[in-house]
Image 1 (cartoon, rainbow, N blue to C red):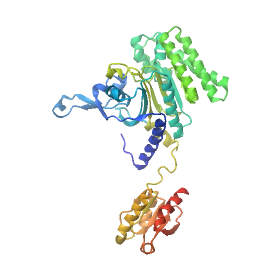
Image 2 (image 1 turned 135 degrees about the horizontal axis):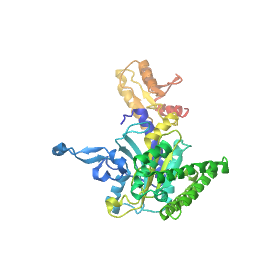
Image 3 (image 1 turned 90 degrees about the vertical axis):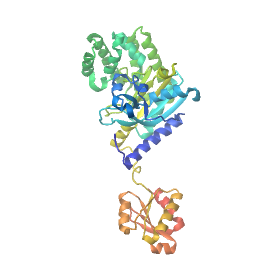
Image 4 (image 1 turned 30 degrees about the vertical axis):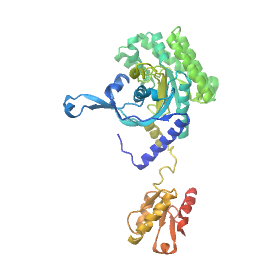
Length: 455
């Protein structure tokens, strides 16, 4: 958990502003929920690893000595959303499209881009089974990243039914599916040998486990074949690769109806994504599992090179609301990870250069104790004109005041000296060039605006 200094806050507000603007253009409405939930609301929704990472809140007052927990800090924004939909369903539209940008907490081991308190930027659609939802969510998340300056991200796409079908076709018994998926989800991070070791620790039998790893090894060779066939055209290459992977999946699944249904939904998502212009960013990844147990259909993850982990993830969770409501409500959502986006953007120097360059457009000095009122009045005039104004609070030497403005990156300083006040003027100093000129009092705001436009 971290403190954020002014420059950090500006970077965060910039990223949130871009994401929020894109989400709203796709028709999503804002929602906020409390930081604290009843512990039973959260437990059992995130799989075995997730339960261990929930920050529990001990009972208070006379119950404190029990050492029991009845509340917890929210682990994500999706489960609270499901609770809200169940509680307020009669007040919500048939298709509820919401975005939510708030902090969540996990008792995780801190690492690069991984924190115990972090913001998620969620979009979700509830009420529709249509694969148009998945495609639009991909488009919204992809557009947000593009507007932030990312050009090398990939949206990894898979389907829980495809995963189940593949596990069944490989001979993995149903009671071992969850354990197998947890290990399989780490394939791109720890490699085949690492997953094989996890299979051993989770008592997944050798023969079905090797059949699975062989299958995913075959899929990796398809990428090379697609690259040769389509040359340097990224869109055609990605389309050919996705088609080849889906074809190989159909072969491996054989008569497995569960897996075949998932493959058909993946085809539909790709078709709709093509109409939205986002298909070239999407890659079918049959090994993608994602650890959260509430996913029922498509699962998504956004990756960029040189980042251990993803910039965001999500998927379809048609049964989650039913845990609170008593009847299932179709739902699909995606979450962008604000912290990791900021880490990558900072390392790549992707932020606008003027984003954190100054705290104010102009600083007003105080010439002496007799001119304090005049300086205060000038500050308010400039603020009323729409400028960001810092008022130096003490009647220090002017040189000291200039030094302070320079240290804060403020470009213009307004000086109300005795001579200037007598003539009804204000001296404006441009700090980067050192140029200083006098203007009439009523022209100060316009003069500073013109100077700012020259940056």
